[in-house]
Image 1 (cartoon, helix red, strand yellow):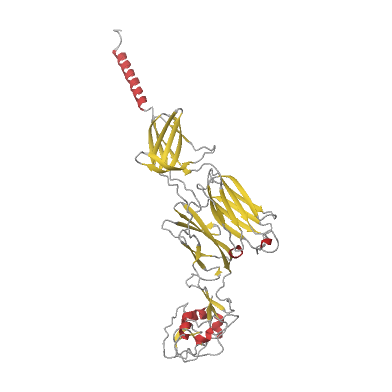
Image 2 (cartoon, rainbow, N blue to C red):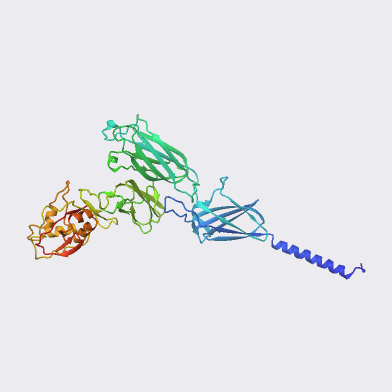
Length: 514
């Protein structure tokens, strides 16, 4: 032993130190860390706008072999878990709508869970490595368990029951669509569509839909006869919303009663036993414009009667959401005539409801073409600026003889020159004390093709008529025409207005609005 060289002793000591230091390093890095990133929760879409999950806390369960760790945390963007043994860990996460800060634990109802995997479970696995930080992102979706039942019953009158409806063997089309979608995935929902031929021996029909995923459903219905006479051309449509409740022994029951009133309204409404948790009251659609007839190419204005500072809206035309139309009011220009559907979906306080109306859009009158009374359309209110009318129509010819503006020549009535003021001007002229005759009165007495709602145009209306009607301008190129604006006429050849003495006699061309 005394002959052992110092160099060998030194080598032995260094080897021992190296081995010892390696064991110490190994011992300090035997665990790993797991970083959980909470992505923004996906939403429960019941039409648009969607309803947020409102997750306030998370319960996280980690399992690896026989070891299980549970953590309860308030809502946050990320969480780092220390001291995990290296290996495969299974993660299960439940989202709750409450958080008890004093006890540091979740509270309330479970409203979210991990998205299902292809095998149907809601688990996530990750490989925690020694001495490293393993990151994983969690995608939460609305949580619901169990299935429900939807029962639909339709009642309709028989011909021998004194009803004016003739619905022998009617056909009912029902289209049911789940709206708890997660992005573009119908993960917990289903759709159902069926055309039901009602038996002619009874006046009711019931269909039961079993094992339906819980959530909100849009139900579109169309009922029409199966006979060649009577009401064969009538279609009854409705759009309703129903909630299917999980593990409900009774199920959601919808009843539809067909009545004679539907001949007038053209719509049908279901009555649901489990309709809305909090129905949005006074929800309807008003058409703001007062026109009795709606024309293509003219902007139509609508408003939703339901008003709340916390409400959000989405408007639809013919079942398609109109981008950016999320206010209580809505304006739209129908480019094509025919029947069009306008719907608004309203969300307030976690409750969604909708209302729909049907628009019968008529082909548009165009400037230069004949109007209702056989005259010439010379103005179209495409912006909906004027209440009660859209078009101005000029008579096809002047009144039979020229005449004075009024028998009252020394008083200014105070009439306007603006477009849209001619009718009011005419009424003001006739209402003067001592009035017996005038161009305005002659216009109101004019009758053509059954229409007797003519008036003397304002000077701006007269000028637009002349400018937009070349046939009129050519036929009266040298004639002055009275307007209902005080002392003003318009000269067809140069389309300009001039002051004239009221007792002068000039041509008169009535116009009307519709």
